[in-house]
Image 1 (tube, rainbow, N blue to C red):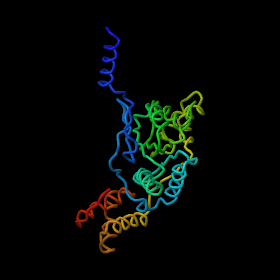
Image 2: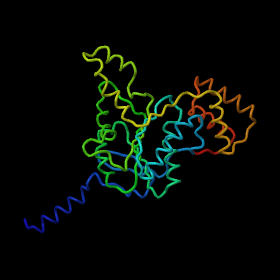
Image 3: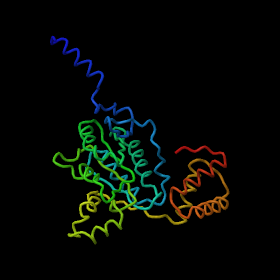
Image 4: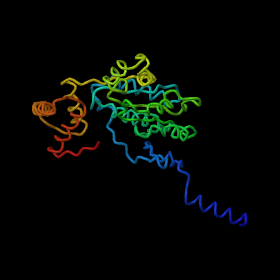
Length: 283
């Protein structure tokens, strides 16, 4: 077979099997979702988020994460952040809202949000290689992060937190949310310590993973005043006018039937109220 024929065959095979790591035009969207098999960054046309000002009752966490993200967008040192605590209190909403606010303030930074699923953590090294030489700055975002007893995914996460031999790319930072401060159940920690030959070392590797986040931002269950303030803020933002006494009574009844108060419960009540009042809502 001639050299020219071999060249044509090779070109045809290349067209049929494009390299799996090809990335889309990163300038075409402000957020992406990382997929594997094959590896690719899927652009998100519109990020599902609410305005930063609508997040009530988490002022300290909001201000801290916003300042850290602004530093990062400016090319200055910034910490990885673990947002942990009560369910439905706006951890994931805060990450997306902060990204939106910083993108609006500093569009020249090229700040992108890249979501990675927990089950795809073993591929995170390949994602870092893809982003290392890319233009712009990237927030890796992993929602609802936690690990079970025999879970080895946490070792892959160290590629971001510790950086390994190459080090974490300067243009990448990791924000993760979790209901658990130490990313694993408390009873599992106690069981490991109680049954291990070397109790102090049995869970050190997993527990210390959370210590590798430079920022720990705690989220706690809200009180009734914050709960009502959230709903009032939604009403003002979306132009829903309603008698204050009626709003308070219905909101309290709603949370009583749910058995809890949180930002999520407040939004669910507002969504129901807006539907009954004929007000269109996005988010």
